[in-house]
Length: 265
Length: 290
Image (cartoon, rainbow over all chains, first blue to last red; front, side, top):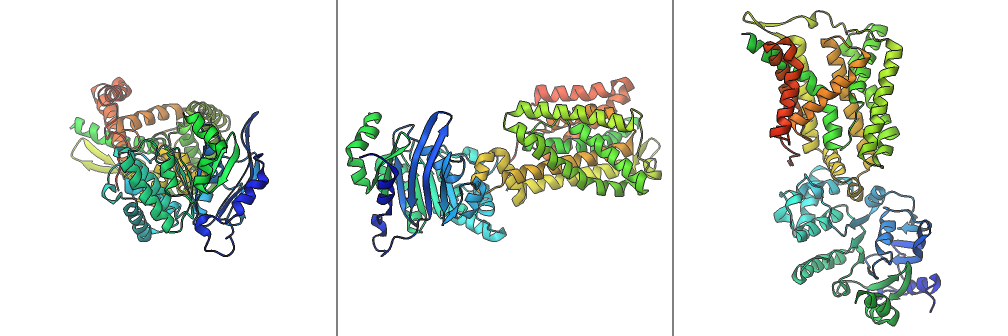
């Protein structure tokens, strides 16, 4: 089957497993429409269509160089697409900058945690609560403390961000994104570098976020972690959607096995 | 005693140096931008105050209040027009761009106002002071300068440490891309920081001009002193900048007490000693306080 855009959008229009209780599919909270991204003659993304239903968890996998992080950059506003548009809650946000998208409800965590050094963990989250979440004064402080607690970081609140362990930094990264009150959270390879036990803790936190109704787009190389959380899976390869749909079906798709696992071996 | 008087005068001089260094410390230590036109922007501020006071016939102190917002706008223009573009291509280009701006400013001021020295007339305040004993006198202007420096640097330090806008500035300084990811409009933050930095440069220029004569060519010397103050005090700490100003001022006046020719050299010597034995400055690197 050719990986053209039409069958993919049709696939995305099918109700996701988690949304099967709804009679009609809810309008997507976030959508990438016909995204192309080129750097000179290098084509990184070629006609990507992706939709995300409210509260849905979408996983994205693909071999290195498939364009996953570029796609996340385009969803968060860090890069502009060469062609195509991004819509958030029915609004065209393609030309919105990162900070505006954040304030309107698109949160993101980095692959390598980037805490604000020279500030405590609490201050890292507080600044996000005030600037991204538009909380004020006491409400902002309460919100920041609540988010730290949800991410298991309350005990580290007053430690300098630079002194935290990798797991703590990853939690802080997530807490800071949560403090901006996202409706959509973009996660970039958060399980990398963690032990299985640490990954389990992180997954529990993410499952809690899902239960709170936050929609998630999650890029991850650690597939078994991903499969425990997501409703739907997209496999990218060479800038195109190779397969999309129910996670187990996508992972057993021969083309995915060849493109993704084949190159990883 | 003459030595006590030298130290007292040094603290007064240190107030001016701390004011000069305030904006530089903010941009250099907090925003990671080296502004080589800082000294010449201070001279521009002094000339604006002088022209306004003479043209409208108001006190220089009142003129300063009117000039500060103008200097703030100059700061925004500097950030939007030059620094934001230069920063994208690395720290070196912002240094080169502001070095060029320094030359342009100096020559424009020279063209308009000539090379003659002039001074700001503040009446009897320039000469009166508290007489303590036979050899120690504390000039009122010096007291006022130190008070303004303490209030300004202390106020800015509190702003950075305790307020929302302060945390937004620190977050942007640490990592501008990530700051945007938590909803901070980094362009606005940079513009505010530049506005504050250039306004304080204008304030420093005005206080310098009340204290001694000034001319279009004095910018680079003041820039050099301001850099020494920032390094002596420690990058990123505004309390450190205040302390650094005092240390440089006292070093120069005590040096002059030994031998008038030794004044400037003594200041440089203290600067070099700090670089050699305490390179992080008196108050160390950035401290995080909640």
